Image (tube, rainbow, N blue to C red; front, side, top):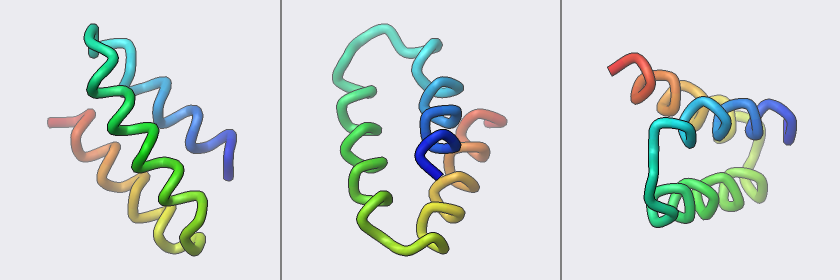
Amino acid sequence: MFLKLERISGELYPSTGPGATSKVFKAVILVALRSSAGQIVQLERVAMFHCAG
């Protein structure tokens, strides 16, 4: 699961220059790691939606 989250962050970070956005997303990932697997899958869907949009 952790590798999957890293892959997601790898897709979102390159387009962002400032560190503020990445800090916020890292916080979201940390929360997801403490949550259930279902929450992490939901986070992946949201991340893909933002990438596509």
